[in-house]
Length: 627
Image (tube, rainbow, N blue to C red; front, side, top):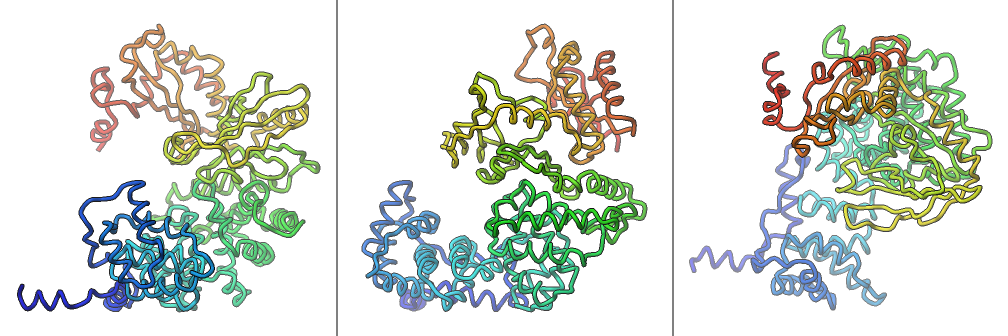
């Protein structure tokens, strides 16, 4: 062994906490970079990864009895082969570790020594989780620094969440706020410059493209939003941004539990609504207030814990405000100041169309939150179309005893669209029980699950029972096993009302619904062309277009399709021409009856080889020829 190697062997490894401080000092402005740092040294381990129960057993052995010093824990981990890759299992095991009262002080002392002097990811993870359970204010700086290592971010943020939500949010944003537009705000939050925080909080774009529900919650937590609002009661820009963050937190397309997890949500709601009269009546502010009202009326905002009567008072205030003439005129002459992302070029028609759609949505929807029935009963259906600016989903919200059942029991995706639940009559009750999927995860059921209920008629009652959730496979029992019973006549009347109420819809969406209904009544319209309908709705990128998707396989009309496992998928876009939806839908159905849709629709799925085989151009080839 060389002299250098002997010195290295005798030199104790540097604590990860000291590494974090050094890296932070070397970073520009002493602000951590996006995604943080990598741990400079890795645990060597045995080279044989422990799996499943073996790893869990090894961890329990290493932690029982809880050692009194870090060196003992390091030796146990090394002997048992615990490595960096086991940190997620370490986190869950230590979180559930029984700690009798006579061991609490010892565990806290061990945790503090590990975060201050620990040199490996597994050992420091143990310390972080112990302090998440037992730590105090003096531990926050250490957890904040260690959280800058990617390998330790998750346990450090979880521990900080129990000790200091603001510190947890700052660390999370420093590592996860990837958009360049958010970095000035992150810099201000990290350095603690409160004036800069206020300034950057108001000016950064808060569109759905940049800010999801978790980012919105973390921004509100990191900026201490209630304090800012309290210190600047006349800052209408800050007030509008606070409302916008609440809207983003409650978005059902993301994770609405972020709103429920935001501890100051009720305070910020009260402040925003209480001061809303001071806001300038721009389209952006009108859309924000209406979105809050819709959420309070039938969304996640209903589930926040408020004093009795407080939610109704907030809704009444918003309804009265949005009925004022200055707000009803909002959007009639929309200008650049109303929009967070001005157009790139003067006369940008896409921008103008977006503004027009948003203004139409506001005028179409603004009365909905205040039109609740005087005696709503146990069962109510609200179809809610979200702000077009956010590409909000259209949801069929079912409320039982005043609670939105999907928002209360399922946080992975919005309630299904009315085309699925209402147009296809899935909520109707019959003597024969049938199971209905109320919502599916935004990523698909196979990934993150769905929620189901069984509906049946029982004499003069309708029963909703056998709730279940699926999380991939196998199925898991639902969180809410209760069987609900409703008066059948009242239930039938409410379903019929919702099925025939199209007040939430815009022209292209109505055209698509009418075409979809026509294809259901006359399947021969597509079948005669060896085709069958697929998804039919308004376009996502262009909501002013009705979109008809269909599947084609030669021989499908005869019942013996050729290579049915390799069909082609077509898309037919029908731009809104301004005529009544009934006329547009009738014209589309007539064209399907008279002319093969494969001549005017375009291939949008299948395989390039199959398209060439059947004589149709593949989309890439069409685009290349156009260029």
